[in-house]
Structure formats: C-alpha cells, structure tokens
Image (tube, rainbow, N blue to C red; front, side):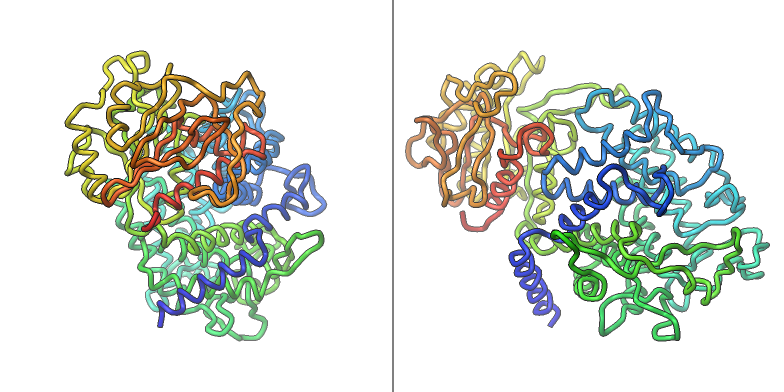
Length: 636
C-alpha cells in the first residue's frame, strides 16, 4: 500500500510540476526576490539588518541556485550580503558583544560565497572568522552548552542548535578545525540529555540550567510546552549538520540516532486529515490551537532529507509527502503576477525577556500570525526542494558514478595552505570543479565516488558510470599517469560487461591525446588533433552549439556553450550524436552490454554550469542534467 501511495504521490507531483511548469521552490524564490528587490527586510517598518531570517532565505535561495543553475540567485545573495560585509570583514549592524546565536546562521552564505571563484572574496572569509570568534567565546553552561544569548544566561534553546551548528560544522570542515566537531556533538547531546520527553519523544523548547527563570520547571529547568517550530529548528539542525560532520567521527552515529529517535514522534503528532502540524505540537484541537506553516515545512524538510540521505528508512517518505501536500493545500495561495504566498506562520516564539514570555499555552497562541513571514518562507523552499528531488531521484537509486582521479591528477593549495587535488573533481566548488554536475547526479539518486588508482576489475566492480576527464600532460603534472595497455583492457572488459564509460578530452594543448586515443580507439572513437570553437574573450557566440529537436541525449536542451574542443572521428560501432559546422562534437558507441560517450572537452565543469559566467541562452546546466539522466538510464 505504501508503495502505491509513493507512486501516486510521485505521479501527482510530476503532473503538478508539468501543469505549473515552474517548481514551487523557484516560484517562492522568485516571490521573495520580488518582495525584497533592494534588500531583505525582516522587521516591518525597520531598516534591514544582519538577522537569522535573512540567513535562512539566503540558504533557501542557494538551494534553488543549486537546483536550477541560474546564476541570478547566487548574485541576489551576494548583492544583499554586500550591504553588510565591509572590505575589512566587519559586518554592519552585527554586534559581537551580544553573543547572540541568532547572528550566526547568515554566515553560511559567507562560506558559500568564499568557496566560489570570486574576486575580492577575502572579506567573506574575514567576516566568517568574526562569527567563528563569537562561537569560540560564546558563554556556556557548566557542561559546555551555548547560552542562546548573553542576556539569557544558563539557557539552551532548540533554536540555537540550528542557528549555530550548521555554520560551525561547515566552517570546521573547510578551515580544518576537527576538534570542534566534539563541541558540536556536545550541544546536541545536552539537548538529548535534558530536553527530550521520554513519553512523547518530543523536545521541549528550552531548559535553564540554573532553574531560576519563572518559565522553568523548578526540578528539571524545562520550559512547559512543546512548540512545533522549536522542534523544527532542532530537526533541521540535525540533517544539516550531518552534511559536514566527518564520516569517521565517533559521535556521527549518535546524531543519526537522535534523528531516528525524533522522527516517529513527528509522525505521531502529524494531523491525520490535513497532513500538517499544529502550533502546539501535542495539543491538537484544543481551543486556540491552529495549523502552523513554518513548523510543518521544517518537519517535511527534515523527514524527506533524512530519507534521501539514508538516515531514515523509506517508510518515512509518505509522511513527508502527505505533509507537503497538506502545506500546499492549507498554507499556499496564488499571489499577483505569478507569485505565491505562504499563510499562517507564527511571527515569533520566545521565553523571558521584556515583556515577559512565560512559555504558557496562552503565550504561544498570543503571538501574531503572518503571511509570508520569512521563518516560514525559507523552510517552505527547503521542503519544496526536497520534494522536487524526491520526485525524480529513483532514477539513480543503487547506482554509482565514479570520476577518475588517477589519469587526471592536479593539485593546488587549499584554504589552509595544504595540498589538495582539484580540477574536474566532485569536491571542487570553484569554477574548475565538477561539484554542480555531482549535485545533479546525487539529486537523481546516484552515489558519486572517485577512483584514485589505475582502473581494475576490483575498483570498477560496483561502478555503473565511469568518467575519465582530460588526462594529464607533463605540463600539468610532474609525473602523469598515462593510460597503459592493462588499463585499456580492464576498462574495455568493464564496458563490455555493461558499464557506461564517459570520455571527456580537451583541446590539444591541455590533454594527453596519444594514450587517451588508444583507449578511445577500442570503441571506434578518435579525438582529432585540431581545435574548433575557438573563443576570443567574451565573444560567447563563438562557442555556441545548437542542439536539434529530438536529440537522443539532450532532450530538453536547445543551445550549449563548448569552447576550444577537439572534434571526433568515428567508425563502427561509434555513431554521431551531435555535430557542428561539419565537425562531430559528440559520439556514442554501444559495445557489448555497455555504452561509451565521448566529447572533446570537459565542458560541464562549474564555470559553465553554475550560471554565473555565460549568458542564460546557453543551457549547460540543463545539458548536464540531460546527460546525467541518460547515463543513469537502464536503456540508452
């Protein structure tokens, strides 16, 4: 029955996306950008300032950028954040001495921008360093838990886990602070120790170590109620921190266990009829209680991402699907000029302060409910992205896409001055890398990996797609690994047994053609010793290649940009897939049970797929998705 429900949901979502043509994640991102053309304002009637809500929107829009390859989303974030980050790395309106964890999450955008190929980007690193300094000096409870704010002494709030820890984890990973992952794990462990209710499995909003606050239980220090958005912050913190938490860290398994403990509680309190969640999680139809948008979006996001990443079993996906369908019905309405609105987000929920918030049921219901509050809009985009991925990621389930890191093996200094491999690697986020293409494969459900040594039957055994890109010349690597006879035999055997091989050369000056051609010749393919589509400066039209309607592989793509490539000479069993001005650009060969795809340039690296450099008429991102879809298809 669950399988039938899943199939029905996928069909419904697919039909919905076809009907509306534009995914909800994109529609909401476009809506946000239309409401906040100049800068993201959080508090009505007050000037824009450094705030966690804008950080939430930055991350949401970044997710849309990753899904679409449209550079305008990245540029929107950069333009807005530049209103705050000064040349020296100081942050306008940010107050370090407040030691407020709410000031940290906007730093995730700083890390994204800093990792891109970007001029004058050191200021983003310096600004991120300033936020890191706050974390290092954040006041703590006796057991090492961060105070939510300096003015809230001895208090840990669930909100704070989302505010601080995803940034902390990413910063620690990028800038090599391995011991800090112990501190991150401790924050979650303390919440699990003190704030989890053993009866419901839910988590209380906050606890006061001193037990002195009026809202705190005198025995436990806990706040008196379960507030759905607070639990949502916690759930999102878990699935986001795990993106950066080292696989080998001994505490990683505990973080996964916390999510697995929380998930059944979330499903238990999901409204059976509507699929969404109440403002006061356990109070159901009690007078005054209502369906609340932000928490519902957060829960859907955490459940769906948890399933996608393998932290939760597939049995939780129907709950996420039901929740998302409920969100669309209960909260989303059509706006003007193609925009959409999100209704029923509670404006705020806190404890203490002035006027005093006592944490009572009545208090949580007294806060205003708003339309298009960013605390709901951001998680709605998060949830929409996950649902859009879920609607297509069965294609690559159980399949592995490997990129060669042996014949192409170039090095540079990383952010910390250490040597790292780069250039056409999955991990490289700069213009030189394949991170965008890797994200596409993973969104389609495939696993990406690297082959660090010469290909053998053993290391190709569980690989479905093997990509060899731009083998090194001596100019690029002091001791290049040239393709040998044994390599050719191993790869050929693997293809004949059913593997899909991708051969991406480069222009004659930047690719070792001699031995690469020996491999390609096994399949009736040769990279010619000439260069075509030579481009002068930014005369982009010189690199344009139009794709005819009905192309076998690029079914949705009309025009692409490929510059300075080596054309192909083909003989049986290879066949032409795409040509340009009399030159064969792309060829495919069916060999035994397997398939070989060949092109004379690594044209799908980030520089030409992330939408930031070439004009939008060139659909390289879409081409990357078309190609990934074709490579993962059972029948090609």
